[in-house]
Picture 1 (cartoon, rainbow, N blue to C red):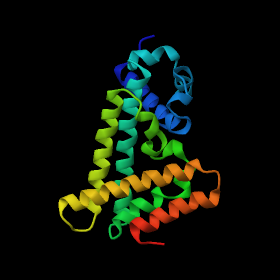
Picture 2 (picture 1 turned 90 degrees about the vertical axis):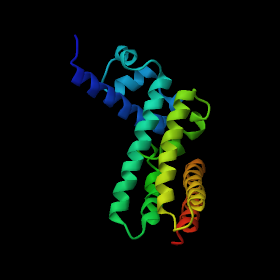
Picture 3 (picture 1 turned 180 degrees about the vertical axis):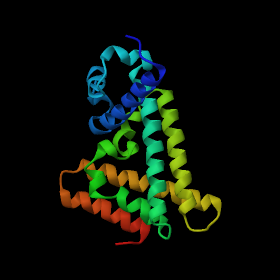
Length: 190
Protein backbone atom coordinates (compact mmCIF):
# COMPACT_ATOMS: atom_id res chain seq x y z
CA UNK A 1 0.00 0.00 0.00
CA UNK A 2 1.39 3.38 -1.04
CA UNK A 3 1.59 6.06 1.63
CA UNK A 4 1.11 9.77 1.03
CA UNK A 5 4.09 12.10 0.96
CA UNK A 6 2.87 13.60 4.22
CA UNK A 7 2.69 10.16 5.86
CA UNK A 8 6.10 9.23 4.45
CA UNK A 9 7.58 12.41 5.95
CA UNK A 10 5.95 11.66 9.31
CA UNK A 11 7.29 8.09 9.22
CA UNK A 12 10.79 9.33 8.43
CA UNK A 13 10.61 11.83 11.29
CA UNK A 14 9.42 9.08 13.65
CA UNK A 15 12.38 6.89 12.66
CA UNK A 16 14.85 9.75 13.25
CA UNK A 17 13.29 10.59 16.64
CA UNK A 18 13.24 6.94 17.71
CA UNK A 19 16.80 6.33 16.50
CA UNK A 20 17.97 9.49 18.26
CA UNK A 21 16.71 8.16 21.57
CA UNK A 22 17.76 4.53 21.05
CA UNK A 23 21.24 5.29 19.72
CA UNK A 24 21.88 7.48 22.78
CA UNK A 25 20.47 4.82 25.13
CA UNK A 26 22.00 1.70 23.60
CA UNK A 27 24.79 3.01 21.38
CA UNK A 28 24.91 2.93 17.61
CA UNK A 29 25.90 -0.73 17.57
CA UNK A 30 23.47 -1.64 20.35
CA UNK A 31 20.39 -1.69 18.15
CA UNK A 32 19.82 -3.14 14.72
CA UNK A 33 17.67 -1.77 11.93
CA UNK A 34 14.89 -4.32 12.49
CA UNK A 35 14.51 -3.52 16.19
CA UNK A 36 14.79 0.20 15.51
CA UNK A 37 12.00 0.09 12.96
CA UNK A 38 9.87 -2.07 15.26
CA UNK A 39 10.35 0.51 18.05
CA UNK A 40 9.23 3.22 15.62
CA UNK A 41 6.13 1.16 14.84
CA UNK A 42 7.15 0.57 11.23
CA UNK A 43 8.25 -2.37 9.14
CA UNK A 44 11.88 -3.24 8.56
CA UNK A 45 11.36 -3.03 4.80
CA UNK A 46 10.58 0.68 4.97
CA UNK A 47 14.01 1.58 6.28
CA UNK A 48 15.91 1.49 3.01
CA UNK A 49 13.19 3.46 1.26
CA UNK A 50 14.13 6.35 3.54
CA UNK A 51 17.81 5.87 4.31
CA UNK A 52 20.71 4.56 2.26
CA UNK A 53 22.32 2.98 5.30
CA UNK A 54 22.32 2.96 9.07
CA UNK A 55 25.19 5.49 8.97
CA UNK A 56 23.07 7.80 6.80
CA UNK A 57 20.42 7.63 9.51
CA UNK A 58 23.10 8.35 12.12
CA UNK A 59 24.06 11.56 10.29
CA UNK A 60 20.43 12.70 10.46
CA UNK A 61 20.16 11.60 14.08
CA UNK A 62 23.12 13.67 15.27
CA UNK A 63 21.88 16.70 13.33
CA UNK A 64 18.43 16.26 14.85
CA UNK A 65 19.77 15.70 18.39
CA UNK A 66 22.19 18.64 18.33
CA UNK A 67 19.52 20.95 16.86
CA UNK A 68 17.12 19.88 19.63
CA UNK A 69 19.84 20.51 22.19
CA UNK A 70 20.33 24.04 20.84
CA UNK A 71 16.57 24.65 21.02
CA UNK A 72 16.60 23.39 24.61
CA UNK A 73 19.47 25.73 25.43
CA UNK A 74 17.48 28.64 23.98
CA UNK A 75 14.54 27.75 26.24
CA UNK A 76 16.82 27.53 29.27
CA UNK A 77 18.39 30.90 28.42
CA UNK A 78 14.96 32.53 28.26
CA UNK A 79 14.26 31.32 31.80
CA UNK A 80 17.52 32.66 33.29
CA UNK A 81 18.67 35.59 31.17
CA UNK A 82 20.69 37.08 34.03
CA UNK A 83 22.67 33.85 34.50
CA UNK A 84 23.01 32.41 31.00
CA UNK A 85 25.94 30.07 31.62
CA UNK A 86 24.36 28.70 34.80
CA UNK A 87 21.11 28.21 32.86
CA UNK A 88 22.84 25.76 30.52
CA UNK A 89 25.47 24.20 32.77
CA UNK A 90 23.26 23.32 35.77
CA UNK A 91 20.78 21.08 33.93
CA UNK A 92 23.52 19.64 31.72
CA UNK A 93 25.62 18.59 34.72
CA UNK A 94 22.70 17.14 36.66
CA UNK A 95 21.95 13.63 37.82
CA UNK A 96 18.71 13.79 35.80
CA UNK A 97 20.72 14.32 32.60
CA UNK A 98 23.27 11.71 33.63
CA UNK A 99 20.56 9.12 34.23
CA UNK A 100 18.65 9.75 30.99
CA UNK A 101 21.07 9.39 28.10
CA UNK A 102 18.26 8.68 25.63
CA UNK A 103 17.03 12.24 26.05
CA UNK A 104 20.39 13.84 26.68
CA UNK A 105 23.49 15.09 24.96
CA UNK A 106 24.31 13.25 21.76
CA UNK A 107 28.02 14.00 22.11
CA UNK A 108 28.28 12.54 25.61
CA UNK A 109 26.38 9.43 24.54
CA UNK A 110 27.79 8.89 21.05
CA UNK A 111 31.05 10.83 20.75
CA UNK A 112 33.49 7.90 20.83
CA UNK A 113 31.39 5.95 18.31
CA UNK A 114 31.05 8.94 15.99
CA UNK A 115 34.83 9.34 15.88
CA UNK A 116 35.03 6.01 14.01
CA UNK A 117 32.21 6.67 11.54
CA UNK A 118 32.02 7.77 7.93
CA UNK A 119 32.78 11.35 6.91
CA UNK A 120 29.06 12.19 6.49
CA UNK A 121 28.35 11.47 10.14
CA UNK A 122 31.42 13.35 11.31
CA UNK A 123 30.49 16.35 9.13
CA UNK A 124 27.03 16.43 10.71
CA UNK A 125 28.59 16.30 14.18
CA UNK A 126 31.10 19.01 13.33
CA UNK A 127 28.37 21.36 12.15
CA UNK A 128 26.23 20.73 15.23
CA UNK A 129 29.13 21.11 17.65
CA UNK A 130 30.17 24.37 15.98
CA UNK A 131 26.68 25.75 16.57
CA UNK A 132 26.83 24.79 20.23
CA UNK A 133 30.28 26.32 20.66
CA UNK A 134 29.09 29.52 18.97
CA UNK A 135 26.11 29.66 21.33
CA UNK A 136 28.38 29.19 24.35
CA UNK A 137 30.89 31.76 23.08
CA UNK A 138 28.13 34.36 22.99
CA UNK A 139 27.56 33.75 26.72
CA UNK A 140 31.17 34.26 27.76
CA UNK A 141 32.21 37.46 29.53
CA UNK A 142 32.97 40.39 27.26
CA UNK A 143 36.45 39.68 26.06
CA UNK A 144 37.82 39.56 22.56
CA UNK A 145 36.36 37.00 20.17
CA UNK A 146 39.33 34.62 20.42
CA UNK A 147 39.12 34.53 24.23
CA UNK A 148 35.34 33.97 24.11
CA UNK A 149 35.81 31.07 21.70
CA UNK A 150 38.59 29.58 23.82
CA UNK A 151 36.37 29.77 26.91
CA UNK A 152 33.49 28.18 25.00
CA UNK A 153 35.70 25.30 23.83
CA UNK A 154 36.89 24.65 27.38
CA UNK A 155 33.34 24.87 28.73
CA UNK A 156 31.92 22.50 26.12
CA UNK A 157 34.72 19.95 26.49
CA UNK A 158 34.43 20.11 30.28
CA UNK A 159 30.67 19.60 30.23
CA UNK A 160 30.78 16.66 27.83
CA UNK A 161 33.75 15.07 29.60
CA UNK A 162 32.18 15.39 33.04
CA UNK A 163 28.96 13.82 31.82
CA UNK A 164 30.80 10.93 30.13
CA UNK A 165 32.85 10.25 33.26
CA UNK A 166 29.83 10.55 35.57
CA UNK A 167 28.09 7.86 33.51
CA UNK A 168 31.15 5.62 33.27
CA UNK A 169 31.88 5.14 36.95
CA UNK A 170 29.85 2.84 39.18
CA UNK A 171 30.28 4.93 42.33
CA UNK A 172 27.41 7.42 42.74
CA UNK A 173 29.44 9.70 44.99
CA UNK A 174 32.31 9.92 42.49
CA UNK A 175 29.83 10.40 39.67
CA UNK A 176 28.26 13.36 41.45
CA UNK A 177 31.71 14.74 42.28
CA UNK A 178 32.49 14.97 38.56
CA UNK A 179 29.25 16.82 37.89
CA UNK A 180 29.55 19.15 40.88
CA UNK A 181 33.26 19.96 40.43
CA UNK A 182 32.90 20.89 36.76
CA UNK A 183 29.70 22.84 37.44
CA UNK A 184 31.47 24.84 40.13
CA UNK A 185 34.60 25.36 38.01
CA UNK A 186 32.60 26.64 35.05
CA UNK A 187 30.08 28.84 36.84
CA UNK A 188 31.58 29.65 40.23
CA UNK A 189 28.36 28.31 41.77
CA UNK A 190 28.86 25.61 44.40
